[in-house]
Length: 511
View 1 (cartoon, rainbow, N blue to C red):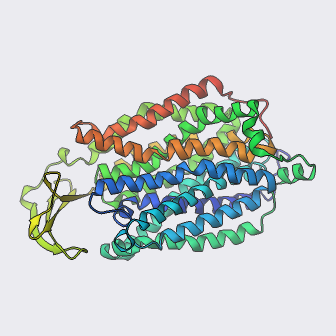
View 2 (cartoon, rainbow, N blue to C red):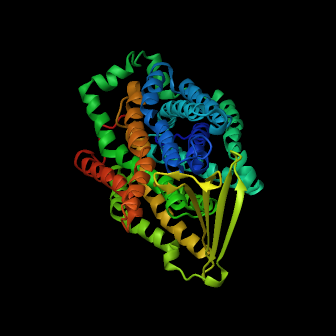
View 3 (cartoon, rainbow, N blue to C red):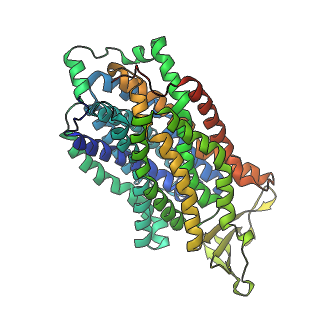
């Protein structure tokens, strides 16, 4: 394509981006509702174990993504980009809708988490085939020398999908009462996705095949065995491994730390009200999203390497100070309590199992306007507390509503993390596309991307939360920072490999 030719590319961008955004929305609804889902599809006996199980199920969808990349990548290089990511869109949409229909654990027992796991695996397979197809499709329509800019629009879709998932949840929460949302309203965001998938399908159905792939196919230059040519060829395998260890591995952990771990950290470690977290995270994402385009455009001018490596280095250096500041900003240990306004209410309530619970609700107010609520539920049997491992079985739920000033402090600190995300993620689609030839591009770029993001990135919330819980139980005063060692170490390894082996402007980049 000529350098100036952009005719029709906005149609390509719109169709590809909308479908990919919806798939990310579908994927992230589960993560955004992890705290609620943990009470629906897993045994309620141990809330911490249930939450970790939910994160592990969430991670399973990421772990299977490389297999989706191999399966759908091969199809994309054999039959074309367009038809392959039509299939992934429908698979993702169907699985998401069905998750919203699964009965709770109390209704069908262990079949509930099993069905959720199966559908999460299907989602992961679909997403494994979607991203490579969309990025390749847009890149192969982009004018020479502008790939970073045009593919960066695809890069916004993951963040926009997360943003929309948060907004749909927030609107649903505000329309319904807390009891209605907890009972059935959490299912609504899953159901809504089927409408968006239908619209996207109609748009994608009218798209043409990538001109670069169509040309290669007409000339008989497509691959007959993309998997063998991608990974059986030592020369190409070297670039697959370089893409993984020098770029996507670090990019994956920076992406998930700056968005998903930040959200889980505020909800579970800092105990901030879920609606407040969704709102401030949504604002941070909205402010940060244009920077994907900026860094994608800039990578066309100065090269991909130093922008991506710069994002990783900043994350490595600044994550611990940022999260320490986040924690201390809202910590009630740093606030002055208005003791005269503290209330404690004790009551007996019948639970869903038709047994009684003793519930103790403590409300506190602080001088700056922060409010604190702690609900301790003591489970009873024959009028006595149920004892597990020598201790009374008590569930504790803490909710802190923070002030507007604290909200803006957190918005800024999350926004800074989103900037790191845009630096590593904005240029990476163009970087990966240019590493591999047309006939095996879909397969070759999809695997390192989805291993880096699906395995190294996708496991981050579960691993980091596990580190935090262990450190807290061990009495570490800075337990809340321990989860950051995982992304810091992975990003550091990727930074060193990338700086040593990746060329900034590769003269042999594939067009």
